[in-house]
Image: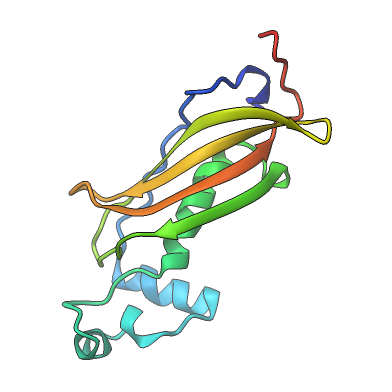
Length: 143
């Protein structure tokens, strides 16, 4: 469903709450992504690295943020997507992905929205902060 005709600065995207991060999630993501770093799937490797337990891949957290975007607007309208990881996502964490429109612009004749992205955990820790720019093909600034 295209929501781009009624986008306003300050609008929030429907939040995404992925399933809790489990050891199975981490093993499956390692296989799907090719990132088999043992600190994400082997508790002994995590301990050797000074961690209490395995933890989520940064790119898994980024994938959850991408899910937020593509649940709001089709993937082909994504123009830029950048993030900064600020904390790890522990096993059993329950991430919450949120987004807010911070700007509307016209670039090369195309209407675009800038969206601030955040992934936080139940304890309030932010694990990812980022920004995306998406095209708004049906945007009508008179709405």
